[in-house]
Image (cartoon, rainbow, N blue to C red; front, side, top):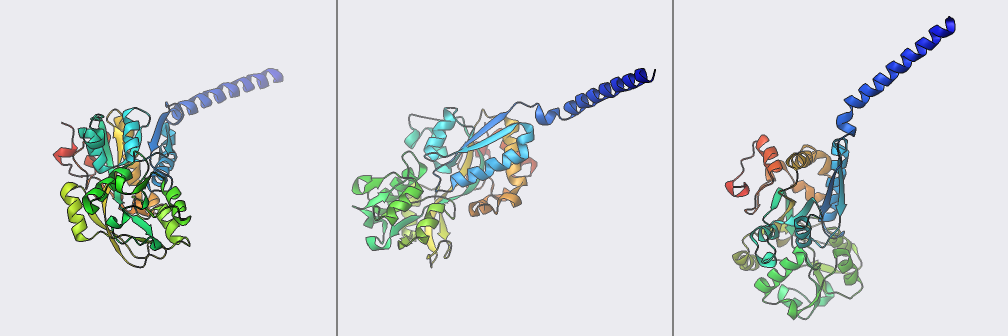
Length: 340
């Protein structure tokens, strides 16, 4: 009789245990049973700003949204133009790109004349991509026009930096890539080539500070950064009104002992309009609701504040998921940033 009671008791315990497990599984189903949502962020060269910031974003999303099935990863690339093409071809979910090139893709202009990407959408503005033209001191280069005949890194093939370098040289200095020995290296490769005496200089566009620029300024090779005068800026702004004036502050880089006036364009986080609205809403929400946590991870992120989220954006629509979040936060969105 005693054995029967014990057996019955064990059966009851087993049933209750299985029931509890079933209940626990049901209650936590929202965390574990969701389908995976893979989010690849295409960025730029590892020596620039896009790649480390993309890494910060993907790490944040995995930490905060992993329980909802989000699996984020970062991928280096040739930069803005390649990122736009990858999004168009469905090879990535998100990308970082210069605002002007996103506009050209949306309208089918410039490099995108025969490759229009009407489905591209802004997710948020990020930081200004600052033009940093760094040259070795012994190259006797004191202005952009002095680059004529020099071996100069114009940016990776198909990158936003390559496009901008061409635009700047032509409109400010009156020279083209045919007038220089143009190289298409990543930023760290260009930094190494400058230190080895194989390169006069480079244009390293990115948020401040840019890793490869920090590296070359801290090296034994003496370098300097070229300044844009107000006249230089006016020449550029006349043909490219999306450029603004910015300053690289003294002391930002080792041995940079004065403020340097330069130019720049807002970089942006982009997606295809087809990317799930709820997903984009969660991604952008987690950037701004964790701003204090991520802003100290990279100096460029100090510019990524909610009040700056749509400032400086050219007329390309915002993704519906981003619109929903910004409206919740009371941000007034101009008509040119809304889908018709």
